Image (cartoon, rainbow, N blue to C red; front, side, top):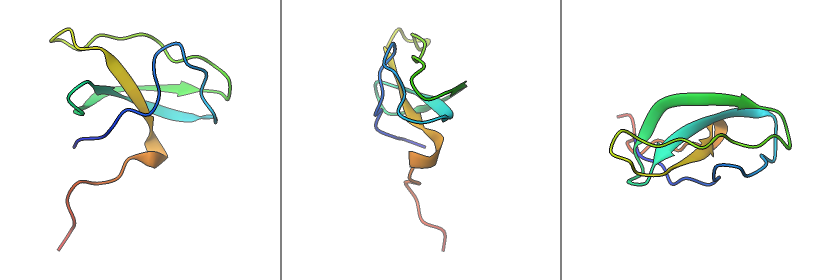
Length: 67
């Protein structure tokens, strides 16, 4: 699944929720963190050393449609 990161490391989050790590290519990684409103997101690096951003779990849109 691919997603566009909407949040950056060290950025305070807008809502209490689960935030999923996304690498620079848009690949959703198997890393998620729970944050309360205003807490900062941690800095992570993907295995290929690409910086990681985040998307809120409720904001992930599927890239394929079920038939």
